[in-house]
Length: 265
Image (cartoon, rainbow, N blue to C red):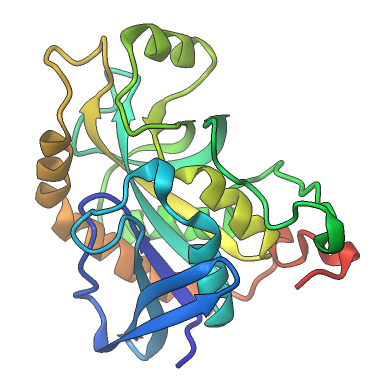
């Protein structure tokens, strides 16, 4: 079975309950095997992938991002709606709020961030002026308005750290000075690989906690999971509406031709 749109579920988003006729498929690529749920939403063929595996068994620094994106490409996916639990660097972005990610700052350290490592594969210097697809971002914004879901920010810069530890207050202070609004551990290299694969990719960030030094209490993974559970109903509505809007939109962005001149894929 093929799919046109994919949902990548982050922390707390493991269940493809919005889909009908769900089946599980193992997709084998040169980067490894990936388990994907395939189904339909309103007749739209949709794939669901749990970024951290069933039951959150894979930490962010060990996610096989290349295998995940390649698997979705093999399935024919052209548009990706990703979810991400994020910490807030601003008091006005409160736990439970949604933000639409627009840019990122990469502070990862040990991740392979390209499909092209030289040799026969060649080298690719992909443009990241607009790393998150403008069309998917607009679909998320329109969906929020139609579902009367308040967005804390329609434009947010995502700081991506290596993890799996949380950040120090000193790091958070630096990230804020550099212009970050939210912090997480997974958007990079996922967004870069999606661009190399010429797929439209957008992220809805769910604020689950205040970052270190802003939060009045020590950070825990449980508070992240608990906040995500509380927001599940709104998140499902937002994703469902976005699937419908994105499915009606012809791709007229630069994502579809990101590395066209190189003749890749």
